[in-house]
Picture (cartoon, rainbow, N blue to C red):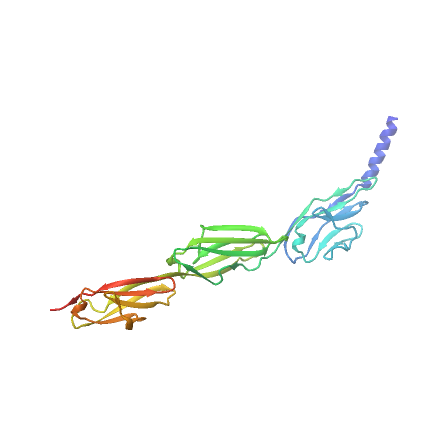
Length: 312
């Protein structure tokens, strides 16, 4: 019986070799952009089982037209090739695909290696929440956000002030947009509003692998501060009978400033709103203090000038 058993085994092996289903070509992993077209390869020798493609291990159907998927179909030489053609790729196609051939009573099933399809999508242009102008109060903490959304993968955000990279005070949050494969990146920049950054340009740069060039958006920073006041007289020595002009200079933002003058503690009403005060030097004014008050919407500051009138 042993020779007969050996003969049968050899006979079965010889026949099963003929029937062995095997892949001639398998699909390869690929990266592409939203809207592109793609063909994933699948050619089989001696196919006897039922062939179908899976996307993330979910069967797509067995007829070549893949009627449930209007952008998918199987293409290639009948009986040999079942390439998966995907038109106008979307983020739904960002998945792993496999070509599978089922078993029959006499042959086992075969599965191709997985082909990972990575789909890149461009984000919308980035936005700075503050808009084109960021107005801040001096010495207060400022928070400004830059948002890049809709891309895949997520954007990386960089901040610059007047072209200089900022590395401190940045917090970044990355998450999926509601139930989609699109991403949103929110970068929050916190800093103290010092006057020396007034007039500077804050730039947000969003870098995304799906775009060849990064995209930028910027905002101009203006710092609001109360007036800085200084007084100057148009002559160094003042003698009785001279006319002396005292000028009040106020550096402020907003620059809309109201002026008020006091001499010896009394307001000079007729000089209200003026940036200059003209005084006829009289010995009774000697030693008196001239004060200029300057006020904007942030606050009020003042400066003093002591009258030193020489008389004989």
